[in-house]
Structure formats: C-alpha cells, structure tokens
Amino acid sequence: MATIGTFKHTTKGYEGTIATLMTTHRKVKFVPNENPKSDDSPNYFIKSGRSDLGVAWDETKKEAGEEPFDYIRVLLDGPEMDKPINAALFDREDGADLVWSRPKLQKDN
Image 1: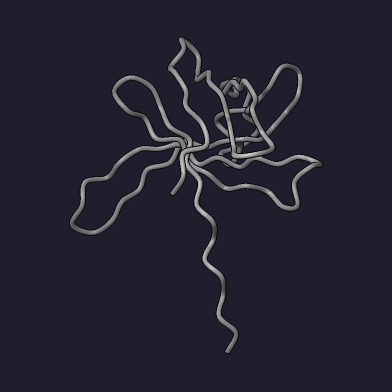
Image 2: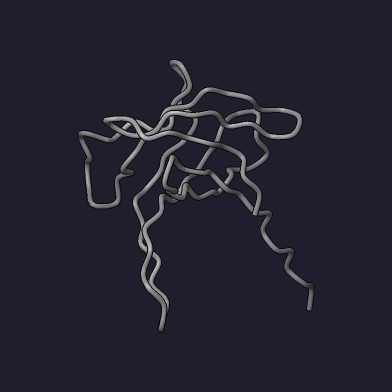
C-alpha cells in the first residue's frame, strides 16, 4: 500500500492533501453528508475547491480472531482518470493517511 494523502481532523471532517508521483497535488476536504438519501448514501463528499473528487463511507473491518477496526472507504473519480480509484483513510494519533494499492492482476485460466 502507498500513502497518497495526509490529513488532519477538523470539527466536521478531514482536510489535507492528495499527492501522487506525477499528476496530482490537491488540497482536499472530506465534507460530511448532512443529508443522506438512504442507508447506502456516502458519509462524506470529497471536494477540492468547488470540484467534486469522490465519496467515502465509514466502515468497520471485522475478521475472525482479530479486533475490529474502523476506517473510511474512499472512491475517487474524475474525467482525467481511466477508472475510479479505491482507497482507504486510516486514522492515526495525529491525523489520518489515505492509502491506495494497485489491484492484483487476474491470471488467465
């Protein structure tokens, strides 16, 4: 997994920067969805200035024999992207990290 963003907690969500090797360096906010339409509605809208960059949901990972932990599942998308980017925001003591990993290639049978 690679860290592509670092964030700080705000009173309403998160603020930080998404930065990748060559193409992206943006100040970003995770803005709470204060008017969800259904149980499947995102918990956050991801914005940069007036632009919408994606959405995010609160999640809890539960595996047998391990402590459950909370994180935020992130979906980034835009016209300059070949396909959406799935990432996760993990809290840490002094902020949060946005991480991404390349999906494993499927082997042809």
